[in-house]
Image 1 (spheres, rainbow, N blue to C red):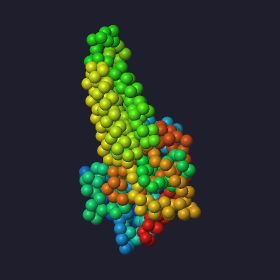
Image 2: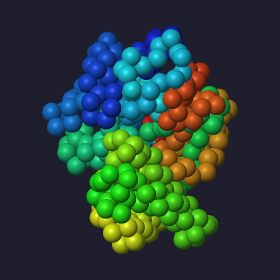
Image 3: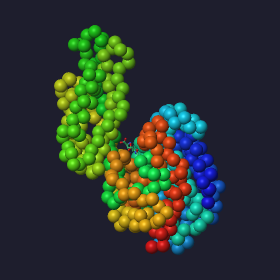
Image 4: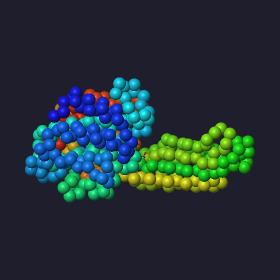
Length: 381
Ligand SMILES: CC(=O)N[C@@H](CCC[C@H](N)C(=O)O)C(=O)O
């Protein structure tokens, strides 16, 4: 089995080569090089032309009653790293700011163990591209990658959590993560000279009004007992100070813990866009794309078994966690295949998606040990 020092070296290498959704070729090549060094006796490695950066590895069980899936996401974010770490990203403007480098490392640790200790049941490790954008999990499912010999009966996956102690496991019954909708808004007005606003239709001013009005959807229009978020994270308009911008683009994300809430927010956002178009005499196009970012709903039976194992094992620090407004396209896979998503604590003062995010490497070994223990307990049932 890969030792802690090997795993830390792997994590640091992965951290230096972050790649955006569907472009994870260097990451894939490195993962394959590590996987191919493991004992291959009961491993089968699979890649796919249709989803070219994914990897699946099947571990043939001794007496399989089921096939258990374990998923690790492999993509990174368009963030310029500011950790100052010696092993910082070597890819300008791209960073593992959500800890997927650690997710991959934990998966490799578990895989390395079962490559040496043949499991009872079959295991399939899915190294998934495109979690942050482009819905890689949904793409894989729709391509039929989980059919035939690669059918998965139950699926598990983790996300790192800076707010939990390093190595702690967090989980809950029901909804773990929100569902999300990606939001793109194009405002089309009329450009013109800064000195003659009466002859133009200013999309900067209309964008400002739109953004402020959106703030009242959550604060004034939805039931405060139910959770929702609308974040507009990116805006681009104009080319120079003295030309009125004829086009503006705003990008954001809607989050809700239920599909009903997401759809309600979608409709309310459409109404705001229509209102801005009317009052500013411009065209406002709203594009909404939920893709695979469905709410992450843990399967009741399997999650109870998971929680029972983690909460009674004296070596595991188990924490019952509230639902989070982070999104995950593992939500799509869990809607198709029963399973459980959980948190792995990585104790950092910086949050997910921060340019300074640096998950604690002390989470790696306890995480691997807890998950191997759970999988073995599950296979004995
Ligand atoms: C764990 C995490 O941070 N996931 C992402 C998922 C992205 C969802 C989608 N692309 C969107 O932006 O709505 C998150 O931002 O929560």
